[in-house]
Image (cartoon, rainbow, N blue to C red):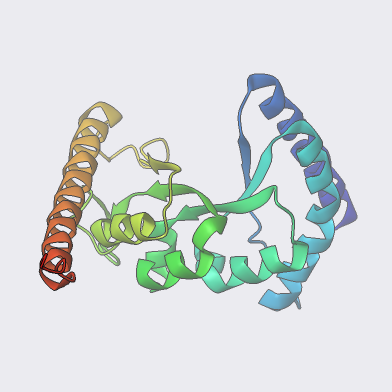
Length: 219
């Protein structure tokens, strides 16, 4: 309704100004509420109408506005479509890979489709349909290693942030237990991928050297 829209608009303006004052580069927002009688395309159109005027203010402040996908709109196609509707350089996506996995979308689909529109990535691993679902990185159904490969494939140079929802689920391990292990696993995967790429580069160089034209013999 109009009251909620006004409140959300005022709050986002405040958030953008606070982010600029703090030197933060982006503000993350959600757009996942489906009103009675709306279909998903109508939601995206409504969001586009309401966000477009605010993005110019974000540009003045030098702060990006990043939409985070939720299970309601977990697939990349919705955010690709929305960003096409608005078409503004200060807009992007905070990609939550676990929310994409929850609706059955693999990184092999999400990452190439969104490509440079991905400005921030949130990782956590889950086993779909089992209790709280949250497990150590690499032990669930999300496919973190494949995500990393896909991100490196598009030249992504932003942050990977690890999300751990113990505030909402007190039964989970503490952050002091979980986060160092997550960091260690991420470092290990990045190292493995870098070593594979280096081996591939050397093989390619050797193959190129073998097939390169040999210099003509001097008479």
